[in-house]
Length: 429
Length: 103
Image (tube, rainbow over all chains, first blue to last red; front, side, top):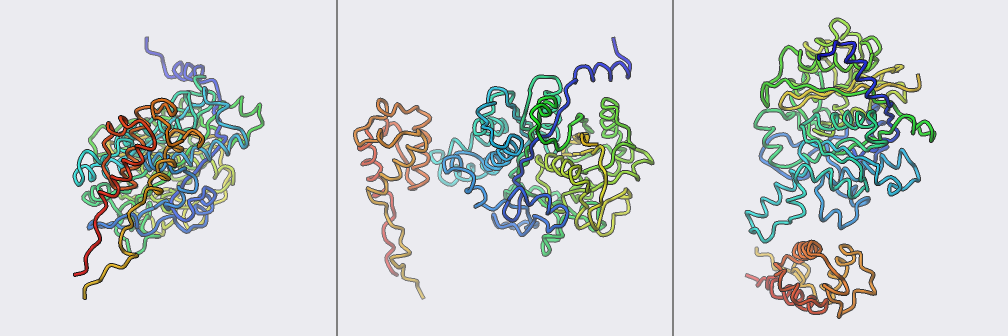
């Protein structure tokens, strides 16, 4: 028997009776210091965390990137882990540990190991190490392949390795779904907590995309920003001069927790995750639903389930990654979803500062939105000077905008036409 | 003008004590062994009770560190720590490139 809309919403709410609180944020952003505490100041006052690509030289264009300095990892990761795990795992370890420490301060993870879940989103997992190991295989033969890095490059290894280094023995999943990976990881983690499958969960994303092959691939499809003489202004979401993305590496994890548990122990709550939704344009790897209908449907479903109306959304932390195609899709979907109201909801992208860390971007956006709620301040879109003609939304540009944020929507889009969304609530209002 | 390699330019060959130090350090990292267990006569399959995957990890680390190729089965047959170190030290010496002659 097919339920009507009202009955579906009622049943969904009955199944998802627990609130889900974000009680910890852990960041390993690119750029100077790679200190988690530099992230929010960078969003509100710059400078961007992007610079010239130093990891390797290539004959392709696009020598700009958001890099995590090597010494930043060696400060936090022991030599054995550095030797036997992929770079994405190493970034994730730092971010996940920071998230847990932020949420539980002096508690040991071992206290929770049988109940702590971990959902990790990553588009490329250990691609960099796989590429390097294949080069070793060709140059030096099979006898010199490092099995820990070659096998550890697989998608599932990201979550498994992270869980083993963190000590999470609950539900552990790696979501490799392109640029929407961490958005969906957070949404799924929230659902597991809401359904009482988990009490707490580290959810987020990690990405290490800086490899010659990845850069060459994106250069071949003309998707990299071309203003490499000016790295700090190359990533220009929504801007008239946007011409491509700037790749970044980094990791962001959030500690999600059963709301009742968080309240009982007096935890600081950054925001609540009301829910997530997703859809797929299903038009191929590089083609989108030009009407925006597929994405809009997923947004409508999310609002319907959570009972939030468009006029209650005070901030959209957008995917917009400075690629004209993705920036245009962002606007199309939001207009389709909200109609005339789309022009009234403040929108910004953090990728003018962060660059685009592929599968980890949704987690960074969620952290940014949660911090925006805490600070009552919407970070502006850096390098947005003159909006592209089709980007006619209420774009926060020039400087951060003070705002009381009751609800924030996070949007994510990826190759293959995958759309993913999260809705956050400010519990302090 | 041909650059004559100086002593600083030539890659130094690790001596026996350096090889031993690396092996001990890696064993402590990989197996978390207490130093008191890592005696010269310690046997991998008895005192150390190393798992096969730990052998693999040790082998990969030593190969990368000294740029050598290790016969893992031979290492496991040697069983004792001092014999393995002797084998590795000989391998390092035999594998290192000779001094570049000035041209």
